[in-house]
Image (cartoon, rainbow, N blue to C red; front, top):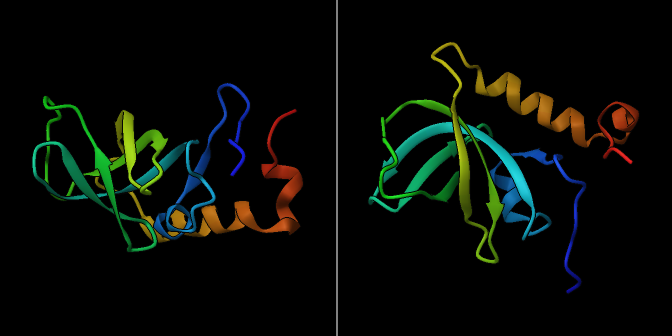
Length: 118
């Protein structure tokens, strides 16, 4: 399989089903969801489409179950994500609306608004 590339500073907003599709391997992505559990090195995040995504984190990661976050990271060959940045999304974050936005971004009808910069 040919290695995918992406423009510097640009990354897709994705949900768990998009990660599982395998179309984002070796790319940087943004995932929003809720922290569910951890073993100290892997955090399971409940994505906005209600699927679970394993996220590889640094040992000093401060886990708070139920916290809404955005994670920027690289998708591995095993469809897990190595986190680079974790941002708090706040307690009023609405995962259903965010997932609708992700689906709109994928709709060809709106491609001119959400296309990859050239």
